[in-house]
Each structure stands twice: as C-alpha cells, then as structure tokens.
Length: 70
Image (cartoon, rainbow, N blue to C red; front, side):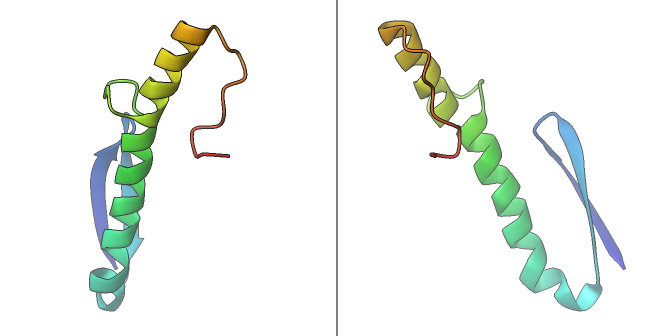
C-alpha cells in the first residue's frame, strides 16, 4: 500500500492506494482536488467564487448559484 499526502483546501489530503494503481489513479484524484480548490478559492481573484462575490457586491443579488455551476 502506498500513501500520498498533499495540502488542499486548508487541510492535508491523504490517499492510500496500491502500487499497481498508482500511475493510473493518483493524478486524476490530485487534479480533482486542485480543480475544486481553484474554482472555490476566495484567495484567487480569477476563481469562480471570487467572481460570484464581486457580482453580488455590484448587483446586491442574494441568489448565488452553487460553486460547481448548478
């Protein structure tokens, strides 16, 4: 069993995976966390969450769509 840790969303993500699956399955999991963090980051001015917050400030709209585009 192989364990990999990386920081994401103000915590540590730990993934335990068998060696034979490492090459195929670990990178997509890491990329998924990276995508969610980039989309929902309040610290990046180009994130979807930051754009929504700026829109609310300008329009005063309280009907904010979910961070994942629903």
